[in-house]
Image (cartoon, rainbow, N blue to C red; front, top):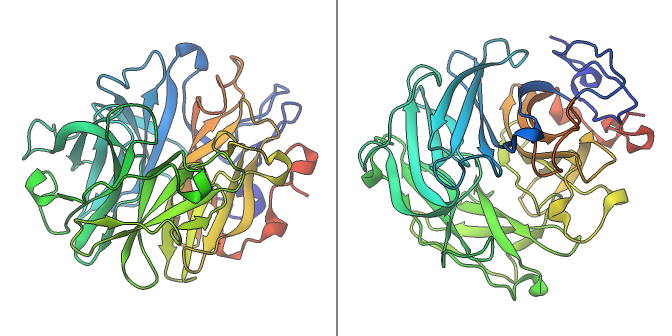
Length: 408
């Protein structure tokens, strides 16, 4: 496999340019290739869109990725579908291995040698968990409280957020919508946790922190929602939930909510709990790297040339960002870029450390032979990316927007 950053870091080029992406064949057409390696593609004409990428590495080294289906022709509001894919060659090629009925916004993770899938059964649904002992080909069936139905009172929201182990427990951010109307503002931040050695299919082993509402008066009155929270161990050793903040202002923020050590209480100080976060108005995943002693994320930042109100709707730039303390964030390099914001997006990235590299699955809205994505949000691709030697990257390695997305 080529490991030079210039071959692996893939720019989203304008339609007049052709690029050979690692793992793809050269195109004879004048349009651009989608950046990365295509895991799945669903044309916009189907009325079904690709959402909620998730990624895991099996004990044998194989990669597993998943995404759900949303859109007007999907079943997201009744019983959602998720597709699962596997790669035996470090992401170079992918094969669909299963389809899960009743899985939405769900996280793949490996624990004690088994693969799990955790999330709602539909848009604002119940919380289910499934286990696979064969790498994602077959899954347990959640039929009751001892077989994977963790919460059956509905109205849960999340994205495929990290599942982490800390202080002998597994932790995973989630939200509960109450009252059950509207998008966003009624989402209450919460945290699911369970003893690390427990039967994860048994609801009795899981604790749900009391969901914490937000307030429209926070952040100077610019508080549309908080959502898609990350379970993260802060520098002081305490567990926090770091959430996306929906704002109208171009100033993107994240909210840091404290979680009690027993996993039962959430607390937030609006005077100190908001931090500047590049890409904070879109979903992001945060992970800590013991080698660099930094927190890292792949976030859909807003490039200076696209700075505008409602930054949650600007997703055409993907960047590598990091922080020493969760409060001060720096853009290290720009990974993907396309000059169009209306029909191109690199978003909802799930990613993992892989030695000196980062591997990632991206919900990508991009050109195809049928006219491209419906819009930036309604993605038509699931793509895989490898960022080599990520700790060494600087802004000098960035994709350049000055040549329609090419690098200087």
